[in-house]
Image 1 (tube, one colour):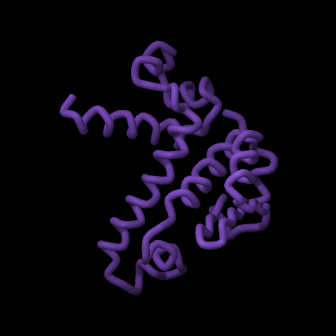
Image 2 (tube, rainbow, N blue to C red; image 1 turned 90 degrees about the vertical axis):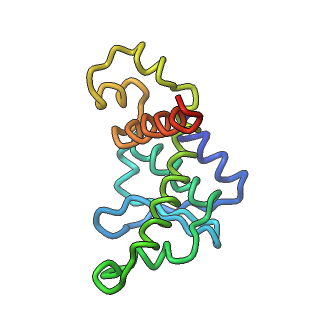
Length: 152
């Protein structure tokens, strides 16, 4: 799956994508209510990272966050409030968006295929599948969770 196809999908879903300067360390933001994705300008020079971040942000539009998610990401939230339940909700929301994104970009990648590559590191696997290491790591985690669900 290419980044170009993700942009086509976003357009078909009436999602607006804007490149802008985001806060340090933040590469993407999605506002599901406005169907708006904001991507950091730095991604323009990083095609592989752009593809992964864009896929995840589209996932956030398709699976909107539940109440508390946006507030959780606000400055100083963790210092001000008891956030254990909100933290759990945010983790579930992030997982749902990333699960969707990895299934789209790595849908044909299963454990057998990963083993057949013969890679000895996460970085080698990420290079082989043209994704970021954090993205590949999530895919492997997704496959492990999927195998545990039916009792394998």
